[in-house]
Amino acid sequence: MRTLKFLRPNTILWIMLLALLPTRTFAQIDQDRQIAPASVLFVYGEVPHPTALAYTLLQTLPHVQLSASNDPKNHKESYSGVSLLDVLTRAGFEDSKPLSISVVLVSNDGSKKELSPAEIDAALHDALPAIIADRKNGKPLTAQDGPLLFILHQDKTSPVVVQNLARIQIKNLN
Image (cartoon, rainbow, N blue to C red; front, top):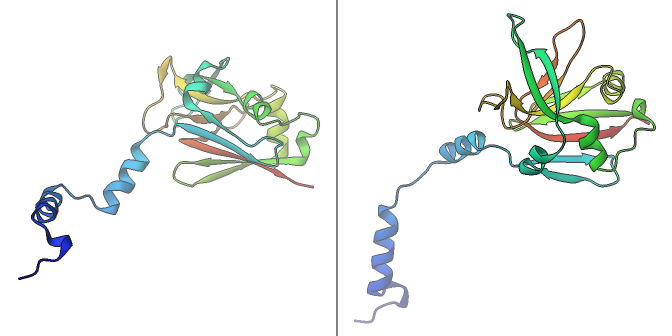
């Protein structure tokens, strides 16, 4: 009797061993992706140098402090992170015409928050500080907030917050 090449005894053994390996569903793989921290922050769109900033690089950049309330009880928290202007400057953004752009912040789960030109202007000129935080009260952010959290402090209203920040898109409004 003639044996087919792919049914050699070694091949059959490998197939049996592969069948014993634990299998994972697509839902489990998707869940792992959502739990895993983003290791890169992408800045793209209408910038001269679209860039990817590694989480480890962001930790080494100069940090600024921001106190803001991010809960209904109005409890102040201390956040530490890189200013939005520093991140945009690394992508080649020039602060000459901030009112002609829009900034879209995208989280890991795909939710988006678009900043108005007035919010951007205030954030870039320290009237209302905006940071990409990696620490809260001196400790790394929780899994819920993500490795990176965008926070824009506002005087009379609650801050603009984007948890699990993954991408920053710059749009030209002209």
